[in-house]
Length: 260
Figure 1 (tube, helix red, strand yellow):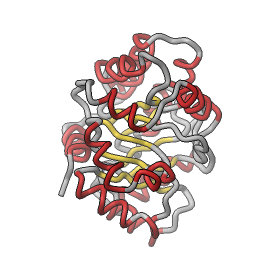
Figure 2 (cartoon, one colour):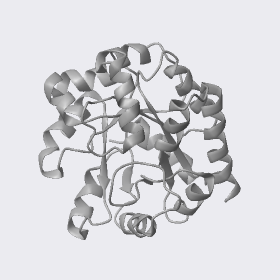
Figure 3 (cartoon, helix red, strand yellow):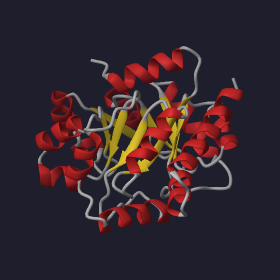
């Protein structure tokens, strides 16, 4: 069955919109939920919320720093979900975390916590496809869509399985490496987006290395949308206000809209 995330992104894509999913690290500061609201108000189609973990293996220096700051404040998955339960935004919220936290809590408890936190989907980048079926099933029973990732080196037969099992959207990792802002879009990003779109009608979004409106527009020549994380968190870590982060999201939104 199609959940809220996929239904929302499909409807907006089919209406001719390019999709924008910004990221915020949960618990990064006392006003992090204000950042969330500013993103929603400035054109986000969904928002990815990082649940910090001490060993974020797929994340580069910026998200690592954001996770470290959040953990130093005493942030936990439960504290993030409790704060989110009081927030009312009109776009789907997506948890992003690592499997260790899910394993320790237990699939059912973690998935139910996601729902209590008004999130409807999860990205778990470090659990292999061959080992994720149990989590996907337990998450689905709780009403949580599991977004799967594909990389530039993913072979075609594996790409078919990822596209079939992913819920919400298919996350195209635009380059080999960790998250982080780049000066240009990797050529591999567009190639991967084309390969995935040949296998599925689900929305396909490119992440990793998308930093500017120009890069977002370039990515969306092939993809349905983009995920933007490090560029926004770098600004926030450097002291930008929630309103300024909202304006940064708004600039990305206008860049995508101007390309239509």
